[in-house]
Image 1: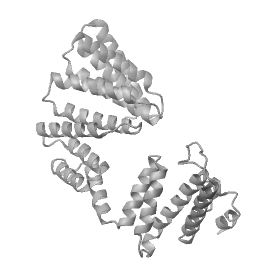
Image 2 (image 1 turned 90 degrees about the vertical axis):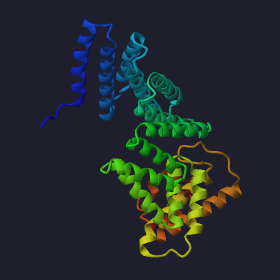
Image 3 (image 1 turned 90 degrees about the horizontal axis):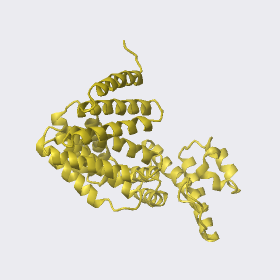
Length: 338
């Protein structure tokens, strides 16, 4: 069995492509092939937890050379876009602004489509790039609607050229999920599975949505609130968690206990932070009127108490930074002893 480090394979390939360029520096494909090797090396470094930036930048430089030599080389434009999208994703993960890299990637895909509008993969990739750019813009206050509509159009163009293209089905399905159009998403996954019956992503998303549709209303709201927490939107999450509580009705059987417990524990954390003027664990504190701070704290204590009554393990609650604003409350010590 071959256990060679992927980075070593890439570095060996790079030496071979160096020689190809030395022998024929005016060959666009030689530059593109070395760019692919640099991209693969960057990907391997990222997978290993190393910084891929230098390798990716060298890939872009080689693609630059390829399109200078042959402006009609559509594959080089498309591959350069792929690297730029990887850089944009890395910027976003580091909480940096990824929009410029995303815009450059879309411009490269625009050029690739001008050169070859028959390529279904390029249409799919541009749709995915516009969807990513819409999200990055929305994170910074931009209205994503226009880009989302453009992404849907691109996925439709991709499917018109290749109806068996499961990737466009998956991308469109996940977009419909984000828009709350779950029935449309289910149709996309079902259609995709007709052409790719063993495709894991399609199967997993279809199963998840079918299970979702069987959930009671309160559980659906709780899942939505949890996603909002992950996105850092604590204020909206609090509102949705409260809607979940209101929708619980008479839910009381043992199987629902863990979910109802999590709702209350998460609300306790959110209200505790809010009592200290913070809309999230990393948010800066804002001034809160004393009466409002007291109201929020009382709600936090109430939610924590109810979570404990439902079986919440609070042995590590003292280490939960979200609950730190409650530590000076005289009821705190007694609560976490339960």
